[in-house]
Image: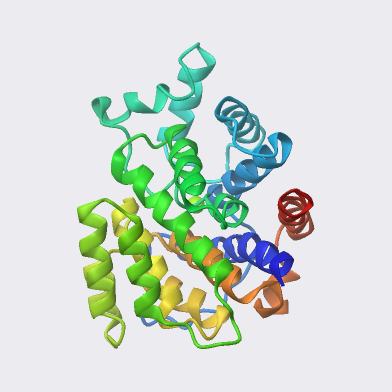
Length: 301
Ligand SMILES: [Mg+2]
């Protein structure tokens, strides 16, 4: 089951990205969605980089992960990267340290975009048994491109949500309130604590426009990470429903889809992901192989 959860999280993240990528930037609230090309974007491309580096080092090595990100980006720069990461990569190539370069973005504030959270599923599964280690690695992998505290904390909360989903038993009812309370206890950040409370209050909300407005559907980590967690929780019974709901909120659909899919896939395991999506997924076999290697490293120790 644990192996299936590792695979489910990474495949789920890629499926959510691919599903959402047809709708990125559109308001698709009432659209009936069933367009699936199977091709994914930067979210999955970078998630693959995170997994490749964790596997190569049997853990986190910031310099190595940075070099993998740069190598992957240079091979396929057309994956829909935002403008920040390529600038950071250029600075690093010119000699700036991997954990210093991203601080230069936004006049020295660093980015609080969701780019560090969208790729974090491998960290969530790999460190699911040790949340303090998970916190440290989620933060440090963020530092490579997203150095603002809100960007790093968003990635850390997303990684924790994946870890909680790995640990939860999918055959018994999920207690959404308990899940949110654990995340609230986990994060020291007041903005995220408030958002978690809001997600709690909105669990029964029928109006999607209100959900998107209050939790956010933007590219900022604080306007998307909690939204993804919410999409999973209110649709915890079904992987399919959770990602379709995520994409139907509009806005940054590929990333919110990817983050929702990562949590939902970690909860249910890969068998719960519809075959029509798995079979059409670009490089699905390779992503599965990465997830299995992560699982193997953790369970051989
Ligand atoms: Mg993307």
